[in-house]
Amino acid sequence: MANGVEKSRILVISGPNLNLLGRREPHIYGVMGLEQIHENLKRDAERAGVEIEFFQSNSEGAIIDKIHESIGRVHGIIINPGAYTHYSIAILDALRATQLPIVEVHLSNLARREDYRQKSVISEVAVGVISGFGPYSYHLGFLAMVQILRELAAQHRIQRQTFGAKGEQ
Image (cartoon, rainbow, N blue to C red; front, side, top):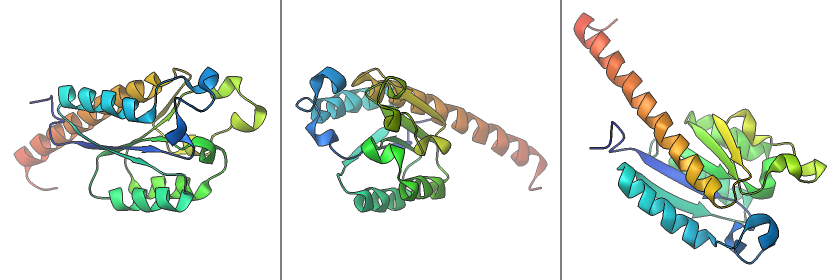
């Protein structure tokens, strides 16, 4: 048993060019590839007792479709929207439609990047944003999501106990 999140499922979405991690501008994004990040997260998920699935696409439409498919299937989304961070109202709207907790992650520190990279439209719907820790941003985002899901599970247990004792209200 994993403290109330044993049946939770987390979707991790990585946007454009993140398939090139480890090769693309390692001085900014680090030398760890996306596959290794996923392997590390799988181990974290096993220890936490949650299910995890991964999706990467360079296509805005494919990312939106995956978000739509997640409705009713997952309990939270961790997303690194890549360049879509700065302008994709369509991804923002899709995430908002899920009504799920969203954790936004970035490998680089957006506040230290070019002016056009410092604004995230996605942050509007995110519970929180983790940036600047390289590949470990995904790990920190995962830890945050597990904690969020545990808190939500505890709130639901309390609600069931409260309404169960008093009947439906």
